[in-house]
Image (cartoon, rainbow, N blue to C red; front, top):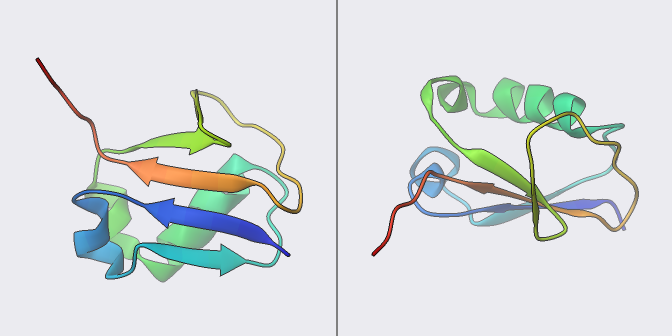
Length: 77
């Protein structure tokens, strides 16, 4: 089953895909490290993470079946 990773907005300009699956990552820090190894340009991009539709601001453990979204900053009115 793995971990589903979704990419939104301008993040897809770097990844060139809107989603991918990873077999295993222990936590969100490990996931970001893996994504940076695959997409080094993410290191220069501002984005935030959502774990199962909840924005996270610190390292969180991951389990099989989780969904992570990388989203660029947004503003609205």
